[in-house]
Length: 268
Image 1 (cartoon, rainbow, N blue to C red):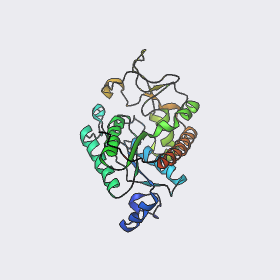
Image 2: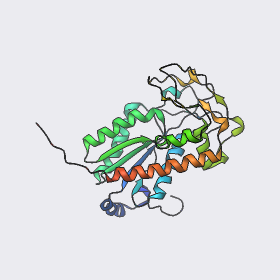
Image 3: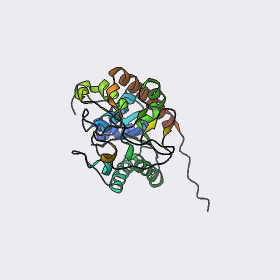
Image 4: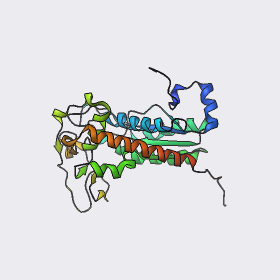
């Protein structure tokens, strides 16, 4: 730890303090990211840095209602392994590891656990992990992608027709949070994927996500790692998106925390 202890950081408490914190029943947040390519212009930590930052932004708005666990910086990345530096974890290992964490949190008495995802290909794995947590513990556990709470703002301020990866959105938010780490002179627009009636990669303005779900090897659909237009990213767009995502996530956490946990009933 560097600097002062933060009231919303799970790992900043002593074990005695954390035991007392259970009485308040804050929502416990697990950010999950990845270590993978994000174009010529962005570092490998994009997914982890963005999801961690949005979770912290939300926590600052409701510091007494949330505890953030240390982020997981690795995810399911097999489709990105043609790009040097990418680290992948097998899907079953990732799921079991996440469930081990959530089971530990529930074991200590916390009843509201939220997994916040920063890497698209983690999503189905984390959803299953959250369901297992509900089945295997007495806790409520949900999951979401951080950008899902800012969808309306994304299309309101974005200039690109397609948003997918290392694009206008991710680049803008990273620029707002740490512009010095971005090499905008190397940013590119790359959209070499086909867009058909039922399949495309990412989100298209007015159409949303593709009805057909299929993940190709990334090196087949992108030369740079980018799908979208990183060249139109700005600090100003990033600030709007970050603030919107943080505020909406804070509201979601409050609503999730207030949901009652009804007793199970064996109806045999």
